[in-house]
View (cartoon, helix red, strand yellow):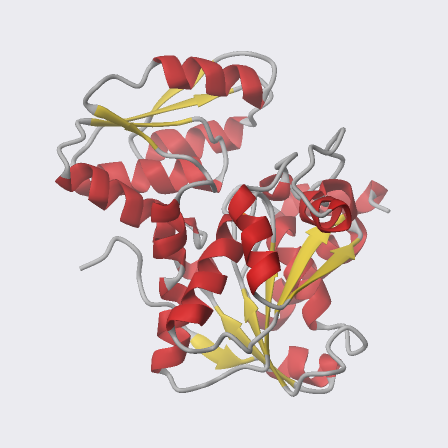
Length: 305
Ligand SMILES: *Cc1c(COP(=O)(O)O)cnc(C)c1O
């Protein structure tokens, strides 16, 4: 038994028609806590639990925190999530629904994270949102499921925040003998820390984050993301916030599932025939995200560029 579930894999007729090629969806939006994060976070929590951890600590008010809260509740381990004052009421409510203790501290994630680290006792485990080999090993299960279905894609499209999903998918491609399958790594323009790192040839801290795709908001990607780029074909793509938001709306119409703009970024590329010109069978990781409402997406769209 794992904490995450096996998710559906099917060809999207509307996206295939839009892109002029077969577009397959791996629907991780259907994980019980709403995003792919449960794969890696669930695995990390299980490993720490088996080593005797008595308490999990997270500093993510987003999908990583939700996944820790869900995993802790399933394993019977108490969870504390420290979030900054900027965290929405909805995010805090979702965390509390999963039974986590929510501590509000500081005006930025950095400050919340600092407090979170001081709360990690000798018998506790801190669960990072993207930079931990246990996470990547767990995320790699997504590709194991695709490989088990015997459907080999020509390319994988996914969103990049801190690069945990990218690292896990590349690990999954390698361990299934699919080292020749390129990854199209999509970010929004205001959160393009992988793009900046690939330009520089090393990880860099981008000055400021300016995107509605808050789940892609890591100023610097994990070093492992650079190792992936160096050892595997990875191509960086950027889309506008507006394109990501419109892709969310369209996905809701097409497949009746609401995802965050973080996921909309990958979906926007999945409808772009030009970006996909070299590929006949494209797999899109529908990473999901539980923190946006339709109302919020419409509000963002009214001013998005
Ligand atoms: C965390 C997250 C991402 C980005 O994942 P990284 O591992 O940080 O690159 C993308 N989409 C959603 C919905 C997320 O929750």
